[in-house]
Image (cartoon, rainbow, N blue to C red; front, side, top):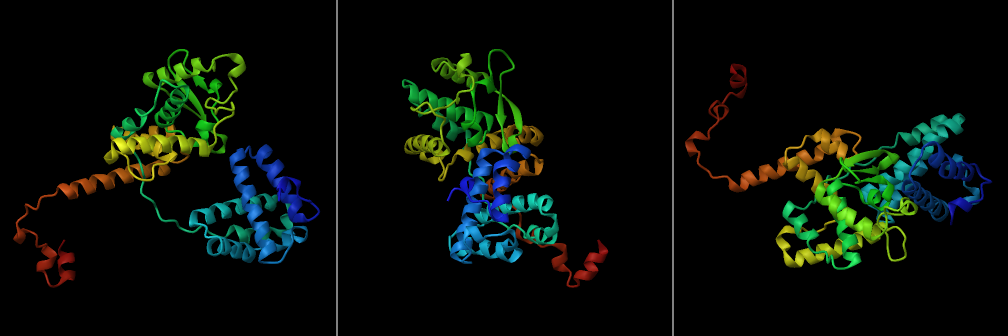
Length: 346
């Protein structure tokens, strides 16, 4: 079912159509990627209402969008569809966004909307950051066959993704007019989440690779400035799956040659993590790393500092040599049978 062509006779259909086609793109300036994600959420919700609640889309009204209904839907996608906690939280975020919009459009149902907004996201297990060492990045980038146009494009793509710490969608959406490499300082403009632009500096080595690639593909010419910077054989911009395939190809090649520096489960986001970790290990301030990555809060960037501290501790534990005499290990409080007295004496 295509939501854009949905019959808008019901209140739910009418407001959902306006939310996706007018409010998000024109008032919130939401990216097409986010709108597509929200659309998928409501397609799944409509399917759930028909299959489980026996409510067809032409009978689906706003009155049926209740806190209990949303909770049942979230449970259903976890239990019946096997969705992860993260996916469950993404679906809830989409519903929350729609309900916030309804607070101003259907204010008479404010209590109903606030009850839905009170639904909390589930806590997710914090995963360890998967990243490449500098030796790993070097091994990855040297796999490219620069005697072919495809190899030169892939080298420019992956090296730029690492060098800028860009998200994969930011790289896909790049056009030549975002590149400033005619003279110093060399920079690139990335459009991140929420369409927030940031300027990222480029190094000489990266500029040399990028300039050669752009000249080869005539991307400095005026009529090509809005063309995708990285494109496929059909002259269309790459997809996320396409970039992932390119990365996997070179990861597999590098792993065969040097398996100890290429960990399992390397993704496009791993290159972003790698750049952040390498900057942190080089002593770059977290504030600068935050700005480079386009994080809103430094608390988001702080995960790299925590991950690095863990690695340092693990390395120290592995290298630890027990030199302390056994009788010196007894703590003062262990000698004192009356812990309360000992605490008071401190």
